[in-house]
Amino acid sequence: MASHEAYRTPSLESGLVVFTIVADAFARNMVRSLVGSCIKVGSGRKSLEWFAGKMAEPVREGSSGPIAPQGLTLEHIAYPADDQLAARAEAIRAVRTL
Image (cartoon, rainbow, N blue to C red; front, side, top):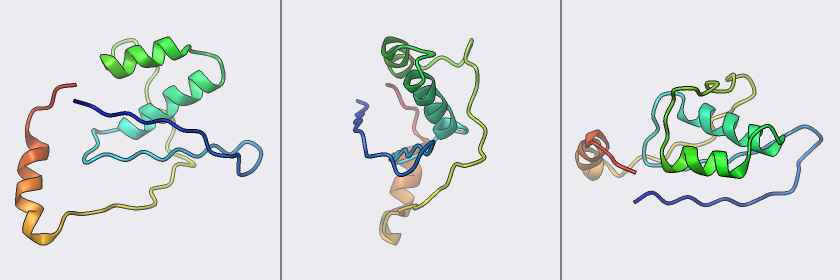
């Protein structure tokens, strides 16, 4: 079962948007797609219902694609302890369902 949490943080400066996205694994362009979708909702180009539908049943057909990577910054990666690496590698390769 997927868990989603959203919260708002104070603006750091005009035009700057901060997203904190945490997961145990990411698909290719997943963060860029999430950020692009959030910006569409925040700017009023898409509705919250549209976003909820994307989260409930993510289908890429008809999507406008991920946002450009310029400006996105990876801040931190947390790895499991050495004795847990093999188990985590096996778990993230398993087929997932939402």
